[in-house]
Length: 333
Ligand code: SF4
Image (tube, rainbow, N blue to C red):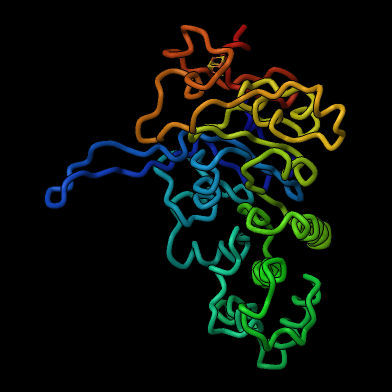
């Protein structure tokens, strides 16, 4: 059994995905001194209409995983499948055509919106590039519909990005992502840069459009609080590897990996009495550099359960309960 065992409606799958970046030294001879293993043997699948939450600290490889699936970052190893077809290594026209079906919602929508273009042009740019507009009237009609879908007025099409708030800009980013009618969207920390008061509105919008257009999501976030309600299943990533993957409720009720337990214990409970009683698990130190990762279990320098052998044994992914996989020697039988 493996965490990538296919579902009946598997839309996206990665098998043993690796994205390594060579590191060079010296200005002239550029001698290779190693690899940054940003993604190192990651496997999972996402069924049609499902949301897989991908969680981990900054530097865990989540964004690179999303970029590799979108073919924006070449895979160094492993395979990527979309609609049961292998897409690893596709480039040129084939990759461009495929990207119509896969879109990205960015963390910082402002940086992805051309400041000199009016919103109507920004939203319709992908439609024009892919030849999906039939004249100016049709372009405007499609822009109006997209703006209304994301809760903005069609009259806003004539404004520039700087005239919008952070939440409105993210709505524009979502409208642009929807313009090509994709089936799959990588949501890369889409609300992390927004005020807490706005975050819930954008999450609601992301859920509404999922239902309306039967979208499938890879939802990337740096903490478990954000993915709690939006995900069907959650994968926890640490230093380029998935350490635990399970159904959302199962993961919150029975977190097994010491890293997942620490991430969960950092989520505040709204009830002050319960909050005062609970035990917080402190995660000591920073995530190590992927250029010089620890031996054995990558988490061992920060793990409160680490045993001697954890420094040299690499734990294997095991299915501990139905569809609940964890990689930790505490669960080796
Ligand atoms: Fe901690 Fe050892 Fe499990 Fe790694 S394998 S998470 S160090 S107990």
